[in-house]
Amino acid sequence: MNEPMSFYDRWGREYHPAPGEEIHDRHGVYVFLIAKGHTLLSWQNYAPDLAELLGGKIDEGESIGDALHREVLEESGLVLPDASPQNEYHQKNGVYHIQGTPPSYSIHHQTYWVMDYEGTLPNPIGTAFTGPEGNRLQWVSLESLGSVRITYPHARALHVIAPEYLP
Image (cartoon, rainbow, N blue to C red; front, side, top):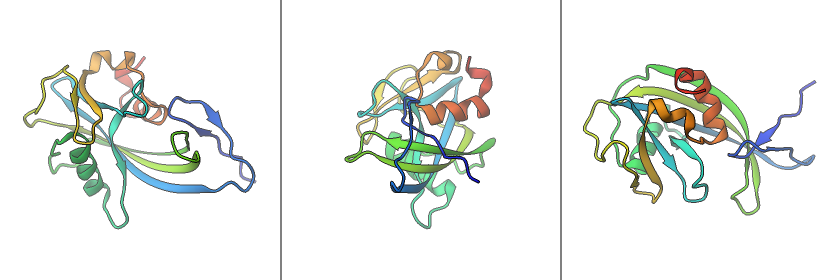
């Protein structure tokens, strides 16, 4: 017998769907991008108190790598190198989307890549800037990453892929 799955919003609050409530599947890819001892984080306008890794939904027929390149470009304007990840991690999360109307549930099948970025940085390290989609971005030092409040599913993944930077 399957155990009921718990669903969490981006702050880590637990929710449970009512019997018969629709649950969608969603596939996404995210990157822990490292450059000069920093990582690039994003703060969405609908959740400005939580940082998240760059990335998002994998579109129908799109490869994981193509989706990640597209998402990073859309969110930050940054072109990722054509390189394989140094590390890859897969995670399944029950997600409660509180910002939707009406709120909804989905099971996220997420792939996380760890990559070094050695290209030219379009914005100064440590300075916040606005991305092409209007979200706030900032290169955050790896030493201070543990003091940044990060969205629940991404924090769970970071504890696996980059535990040395977290408390």
